[in-house]
Length: 352
Image (cartoon, rainbow, N blue to C red; front, side, top):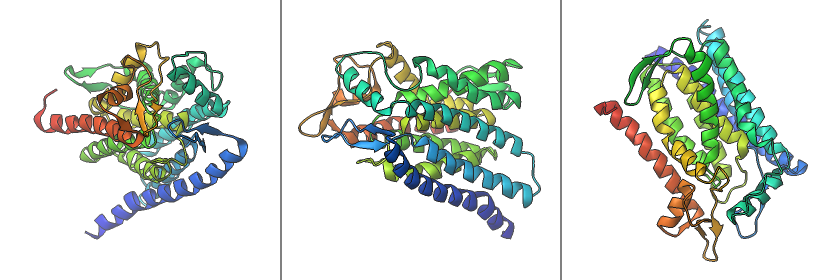
């Protein structure tokens, strides 16, 4: 029993506490720094169009990395356990690379993105004059390299409806890059409402944490520290937001999912949890990825879908009924929760 409490403190409480504290400190500091250097974006669903610090992925990544390094240090010095370190260090490398790509995208003329969003809500699809080049999604493949070089994951993958398939050497060389690029960019497609990205991530990260614990997989620590950091950020990002996520956070969240699913051999769970984002991909494809998720603020505080057609799950929600920003956010969280529920139903009844 005593051993249980020791493990609880060393493996759970200490890394989580470090993540919470470092994220809180980093968000406060970077909020001031970003304002000073003009790294701000416009919160477009507010009447006064406030300019808020953006690119929360950078300070949040510090919190997650601090928690992971705490865990690695404890395993190394207290338990003399080196087995998981190479995988967790590869995860850290992957997260840093992808967060950096998102941060660079946020860093280059951040206000230009907000102005572009204003225009494309009105159907004016000019080229983006901010951020990295439009084919920046290709850069996220850099985040796959650390996982590829250590041959992370298991080549036998359990897929929905298809069952187990052995991909052999194609798993690290082809499927890992596809997974990292796909997850990072898919999560980047859906959001733009106070609390939406962070709120949805609480659902899919909690679900992945549950299944990692169920299989006694060390990758639980990635989801645990990420959840701790996101909970802190939610205080800054819930309506009315004081800090916006930016591409650095959405890319980071996608990288967390990809890394955790690959190393934890949870591909089936990951695919089901990403279905809302896959649906969003096909909806956005109808507009050749030019449509905005955002709504148009009305006098009564509700949001109106910007186009006659539905190019996003957010448009669908806004067309179902008049919704305020928080209601759209809760709608997105509910959609993600339904797919998380589907994962648990399948776990007990083996539907697919």
